[in-house]
Image 1 (cartoon, protein in one colour):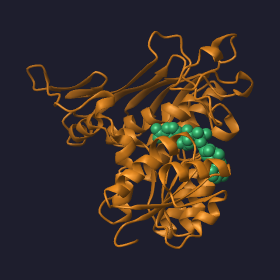
Image 2 (cartoon, rainbow, N blue to C red):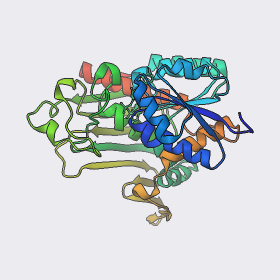
Image 3 (cartoon, helix red, strand yellow):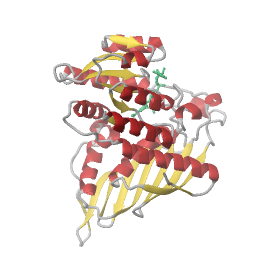
Image 4 (cartoon, helix red, strand yellow):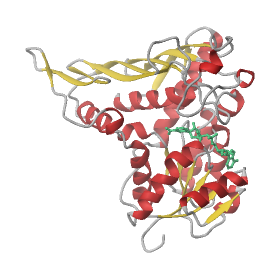
Length: 361
Ligand SMILES: NC(=O)c1ccc[n+]([C@@H]2O[C@H](COP(=O)([O-])OP(=O)(O)OC[C@H]3O[C@@H](n4cnc5c(N)ncnc54)[C@H](O)[C@@H]3O)[C@@H](O)[C@H]2O)c1
C-alpha cells in the first residue's frame, strides 16, 4: 500500500472494464483512497487504449507481467469467464487481492479451486455483483435478515430481455462463456435472490433451456443492447432462455427465469420477489409488506429506486478497496458465489437430462 492506499491493476480491458472498473477506480483514486497503476489485455491495443483514456501509467499484453509488479495490492478481473479461474489463482498466488467479475467461474470445480487458493493465501476474493449494493436490495436485506418477513419459503427472480444479446466478445460461445443469459444476467438475479433469502444451501433443481430464437431469420438483426447491434448467429451456441425451479435445504423454493431473446413487449424486465410467513418484499415495483395481524401494511421505505438508485457498479469497487485497506469485509463472499455456481451447473445438467437433479458436493 502506498501511504495507506491500496495500489490496483485491472485485468481485461473490454466493455465492463471501460464502462465500470476503470471509471469507478479512477473516481476512488480522485477521492484519495486508492491508486490505479496498470492494466492488461491479451489484445495489446485494448490495454493501451484504456491506459491512455483513463491515465493509467502502465499497460501489458500479458497479465502475468502486471501481477509481477511488487507495488500491486489487488486486481480486478474483467476477462471473459473462461479466464476467471486461471487469472484469479495467478493473482492470489502472486499475493494480490481479487475482485473477479461474475460469473465466478465456468463450473463448481473451478470455483472450489479459487476458494481453496484464497483461503491458503489469506487474500480477499470477492465476485462483482453490484446489484446487492443498490438501496432497494439493501433495504430488503435489512428487513429479511431481521426476520421481519418471517420464514421466506418462496421467491421469484427474473431477468428478461426482448432482443438483448451482448454482441461483443464471447458471450454467445458456450465453451468460452459457460452459457448464455443464465451466465450473463440470470446470475445477477440468482445471486440477489439467494442472498436476500439468507443464503440457504441449494439441494435440487429442475431446469429447462431453450434455443428457439437466435437462429430464426431476422432475429439477430433486430438485436439491440446499448450501442451494439446484430449478433452473429453462426457464433451462437448458448441458450436463449433458461427457466428453473430451485429447492433449498430449508424447504424454500426459488423460481428463476432469464432470457435475452424473448417475444415480450418490453425491452427489459427484472424483478426479485420474496414471500415469507409474515410479509413480502419485491424489487419491481419496490414494496415491503408486513402482516401486523390485521392485514398487510405497506412499510416500503423512501429510497432511490430504478437506475437512479443504482450505484452498484461504483460501490462494489469502493467496498473492494475498503476490504484491502482492512476497513470492511466483502459483501459478496466467494462461498456464496460457489452456491450460485452449484445452482447454475445444476440447471444446465437438469436441462440436458430432462429431469430434476440433486445438488450434492
Ligand atoms: N457486473 C456486471 O454487471 C457485468 C457487466 C458486463 C460484463 N460482466 C462480466 O465481465 C466480464 C467481461 O465482460 P465484458 O463485457 O467486458 O467482455 P468484453 O468481451 O467486452 O471484454 C473482455 C476483455 O477481456 C480480454 N481478455 C480475454 N482473455 C484475456 C486474458 N487471458 N488476459 C487478459 N485479457 C483478456 C479481451 O481481449 C477483452 O478485451 C465477463 O465475465 C462478463 O460476464 C459483468
